[in-house]
Length: 422
Image (cartoon, rainbow, N blue to C red; front, side, top):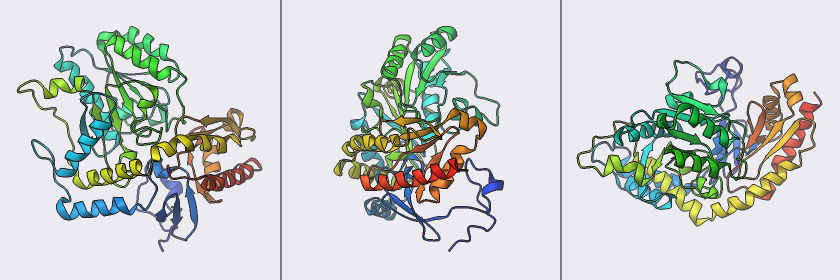
C-alpha cells in the first residue's frame, strides 16, 4: 500500500500543492462505475474520472485491443506519407460518423491539442482562401478549451488566464446570448473574424446547457458572416449527449469538431479535429498545396487508435448512446431531489449525462470554499464528485444504473447536510 501521507513528488494539475502534497487520494483499482483507494475504500465514480470514462472502468476489450496492437506496432510516427492500419480504420470510421460531408480527421493526443489544431486550421484556411485578415477567434464566458496556448487565450474562466503574454486576436462574448456574438462580429468587422468556438454544453465552466435555439442561432450567425463554427465536443462527444459528437443533437453542421476524452473512454490519450470537406479542400485538393505545418509526435498513435476502435465497438454494440438518452433524465431526477436544500441555488442538467448543483449565491459569497467542502464530505460517504468555482458537477459513466444513482443520492444528502450543519 502506498503511503498517502508521505511527501509527494507528483505535481498535480489544478492543485494547491501545499495542501495536497501529504494527503493524496491514491486510486488503486477500478471496475465499471466504481473505484477503490489503496486502503480498500470503494467510491461511486460520479464524474467518470474527468468527464471521460464513458464505457466504464476495467473493459477488457479495450485492454486486449491495445495489447494486441502493441505486439504488432506499439508506436510509430505518421508524418509525411506514413500511416498504420488502426489509424486508417479509425479515421475512416470517424469520418463516416461525422455530421458533415466528406470529413477529414486530424489526430493528436488530447483536447488541448485539438483546440490548438482547430485554431491554427481556421486561421490558415483563410490565408489559403485569400482572406488573411481573418485572424480573430471568439469564445464564450465560462468556456473551457484546455490549457494549451490557444486554449488558455480562449478561456472564458478568468482564473485560467495565467502566464501571459496572450495569443493576440481573441475575444469573448456572453455564453447565453447569441446576439452578443452578432454584435461582437459587427464591432470587430466580419472580415477580421476567423472562428467561433462553442461547447454544445459548457462543462468545466459550470455545466451550462444552452438555451433553446442558442446553438442553432449562433451557427446561422457564423454562416451568414463567413465565420467558422468550431464545436468543442471534448466533453460532449461519444455518447455524453446521446450522439456521437454531441453537436448533432442540435441539428447543425459545424465546420470543425474538436474531440477527445470519450473517443477512448480515457483508456489511451487521444484527441483530434473532424474537418468539413469545404475547410479541408485548400489543403487536400489543390495540386502541390503546401503542408499544414502542424503535428505532434503521437499523432496517429497506433495503440491509442486501437483503444478508440474497441471503445467505439462497445458504445455501438451495447447501445450506450440510447442508454445515455435514458440516463440523462434519471440523473436530472436524482439531482432535483436537492432543489430545496439550503446549500443549493440551482439544479442544472437535462441535456446529456451531465449535471451540476449550483451553490446558493449568498452561501457561496460567505464561503467560496463550499464546493470543495461539499465534494470532500460526499467523498467521505462513498462518491467522487467534481467541485467547481460555484457548483458541484456530475458526469457518470453511461453504464450507470438507477441503483448506482441511489448511492450517489445518499452520499450527496449526507455530505450536503453535514456541510450545512457546519
